[in-house]
Amino acid sequence: MNTFFTILANDYRRTVPRLAGTLIMTFVMFVMILLAVYVTHLQQIKGHIAYIPSGTDVSVPGHPSYLDVTVLLTEPPRSSLYKQTYDAVVRAGADGTITVDTLRNDAFRAMVVRAFSTRPGADAAVPQPAGTAARNTGVNIVGFLLMFLLMQSFSNMFVFADDKEQGQLVRISSTPAPFASYLAAHCVYSVSLIAPSWIILAVLDACGVNVGFTLAEYALLILVISFSGVCSRSCSIRSSANRITRICSETRRSCLQRSSPAVSTPLLRNIRRSTYSSARCPRKGSWTLHAHLLPAARAVTQERSCTCSVSDLLCLPYRVQCCGNGGRQGFCRTIPAALPDHSVKKTASTEVSPEDHRFSLPLML
Amino acid sequence: MLEGAMTASNCFMERDIKKPNLRIMYSPAGPSAVWLSKLTASFLFDYVLHCMLLAVLCPALHITLGARPLVFIALMAPIEFASAALGIFFCCVFHCEETTSTLLSTVISIFGFLGGTFFPTDGLGKTIAALSRVSPVRWLNDAFFALACDDSTQYVLPVCAAAAALSAALMIGCKLLFRTEDYL
Image (cartoon, rainbow over all chains, first blue to last red):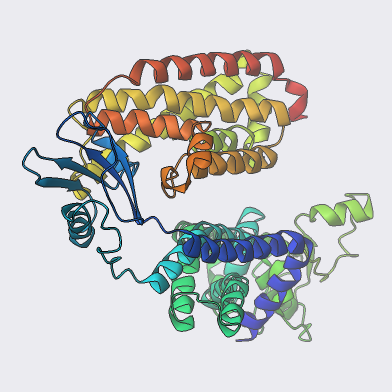
């Protein structure tokens, strides 16, 4: 859990430079919710109907006010139904019968049939379909929010994307920190930034505005949508994990190959278990090891006071050089294999004495 | 298909690809080989991927491409090429993949919004319906829906001609604006 909360806190710290974008997106969602509520109450038209009379009379037949009727003398293309230019095409027969062609459901078809089967001018006689206005508000709100929720949840996963691009993911994965906690922290962070949209809905609901669905339903919908965005961004986790596993195994194999067989097993055990003791200097030579092996190197040098915190996960790989004859009496020192860009800029020099950086852990943040 | 512009911009100026591009530029291949190869690669990638999507989704979801499925698939090609050319051209103008992606993503989203990708705009009044005519997404929707639903090829030639003209103009722009110094 320590890793989870540390990563979560770190994610929020990384949000600060992007605060403007997050606030703008929240504001946009607020506007979209208001727009959806407004449009739902404004929208009275339930369907756009193309009416084809039996003769050449182009006068619009009597129809309920909630239907928008366009009289056409020729059949509209079938694609107009797919593009929803028209919701239904009504053909009037010479004997007064009508045929309705629509891609919408049977309830809509029945409503159109009822509307055009009544006598002309009987607007009020045809009851408005028992359309659930409340549901329409909810459908509109979710529809209007869908794209922005996906975009925001997608962009909120920059924490994972940046870690991956900058190579931090490999280092984090090669440490004792639980990878599941790391991912869970990112997911919780991403979803938490979407919570304001639900809070806006809750406030509107509390103010008496009809928002359609219940708040619990909205919570579920927003959660599902946001997780879709998170998952789409994290879809390459599997490939990343495979890559990480490969790199780690290569590192271990490299250690094995460079170490003498007699002493490689304890070192390998240390790598696997990430224990900080009983490591022995394998033999004279040098190894490029990841940061989590640094404690093992310290153990070799009899310095047991080291502590490995989450911040250690963000270190660059270290090069461990063993100069002794092997065993606990050997002498080891650690040399940074490379320096992070910002460190290079700060020191204005790439010439770094190994002793100066002995056991120092330059942070990437 | 228009999103292919972002594939092209990523393929052209993504951070990790910039340095390899530099190596190509100083090879005997010449500078035009860089953007032209990226353009071709992006186009082929998008086109093949979308064709594979059609091959999977059409039988799975019982979608029909109309009486002329080959014309439908062939019509996708010039549009994919023009989108890839657009992405490369924006990269040549802005010299930055992130700016290009952000700008193209916004522009394409607005076009998609106006063109009725997310919901039909015809029902939102005459003003919105007229405004949607500005969006190329609307015209592409019309062309593909006419082909798939009405078996009508009336939009095929105009769309092909417009895409070819746009591709030619953008490629000339790339040729004029592409500078090797941008990679240093």
